[in-house]
Length: 246
Image 1 (cartoon, rainbow, N blue to C red):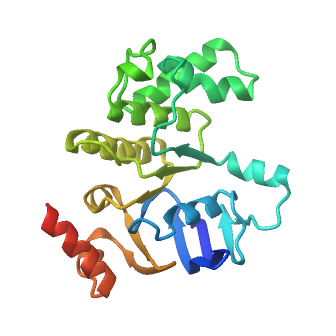
Image 2 (cartoon, helix red, strand yellow):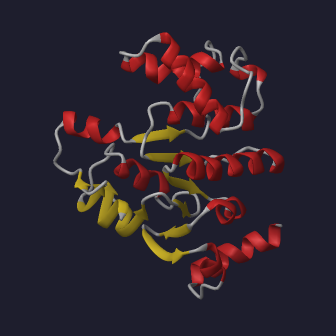
């Protein structure tokens, strides 16, 4: 079953035609990485998935429901199915790890403090972090901050987690930790993951399927092994540059 289904998606900003008929299906319980160079439309596509942008043409279905035309109340209900890990982690500098992860639970309300604590520690365990409740973001590495951000994204038990360039700015060891974190979350919690990235090595390490976005359209899609064998010109050039830099 497709947890997210994008069909014939077009979006322009003035004369800039960013998306030109994107078709993409993200299967439930899988990790899909959307690859592409800067300016290829990856972030714009992700914003359509969560209903932050409305397409000029085309449709987006989330968990079987078409989200175009929904009221604000309807969109809010759909967005509760998502968790989000931002490129910068976007933790609150003034809050410690516990309170950062607890934040969405406290905001939603209705849970006793003991249950909030249990959930926070459960999600920190998923990302491999224990005993750091009292640490602040400035006391952690970039990789650790990303893992705390994922724990916070998982706090409300979303069906889907979106990752915006999760390995940007990280060294190779931290990148490997973040890759392992994404795979672990999928395996242990069963979430559907969508990752936007230009990091081919990371993508091939975590993806069940990859989709390559170029000039506003998906020009290739498949498993990492299938992409390695692709004859599509942009994909071949994209991969060749990566191989040269390894």
